[in-house]
Amino acid sequence: MDTARIPISRLFPLRWLRPFPVLVFLGVAMNATAVETVNFDSTEPGALPAGWLAGVTGKGSPSWSVEREASAPSKPNVLKQSGSGTFPWCVRKDAALADGFAEVKFKPVAGREDQAGGLVWRWKDRDNYYVARANALEDNVSLYYTEGGSRKTIKYVDAPVARDTWHTLRVEFSGKRIKVILDGVARIELEDAHIAGAGAVGVWTKADSVTLFDDFSYGGK
Image 1 (cartoon, rainbow, N blue to C red):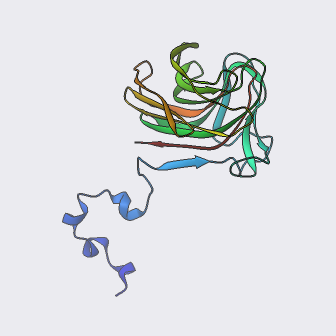
Image 2: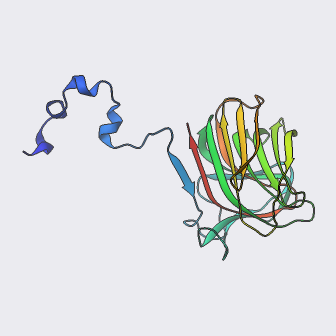
Image 3: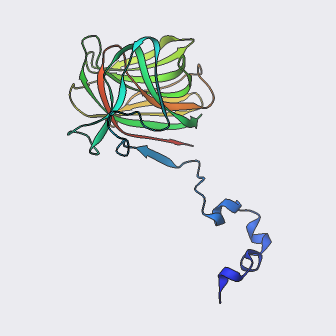
């Protein structure tokens, strides 16, 4: 039987189709829990990844670009911040998550004032978002919200963050619940309601941090 010429209503009676989205039969990937991973390997070195937006909260001249890196967890490329600014950030501007997760591998390389790697989520604009940061100079993990361009501390805890070493930072967020995980260990878990609703996700540094990022992943729920 040549099913390609038979109407779908004969193959699947309408009473069967009603409970299921038509997108299932069209093969469209619309799963809200789908995970996307960006490893920056399809971007030419020296450029910013397509669909990403870079900037700074406060003042300064951050420099974000994809570069080749021999130690990259997924070779050959990483995303590197090598400039300086109050709080440099780089976000996946077409991602809009209210609840879900973001995760990245990061390597703090240098910095006299700071050696930080961070994640941002519910990013509305340069002045309003959440950020979780791991700091190799201070050996701690911090959770902040930025509102009106002013960064406010929610909580910080001591945690080992070795310089010149790859780490994995992950944040899970749902409603008011926030969990910050460094290298597989939950370091912060609490409730906060300062930044609500959907926003972009991305990565973040502070001051003169020279930081490498790779294998950025995110997903909604």
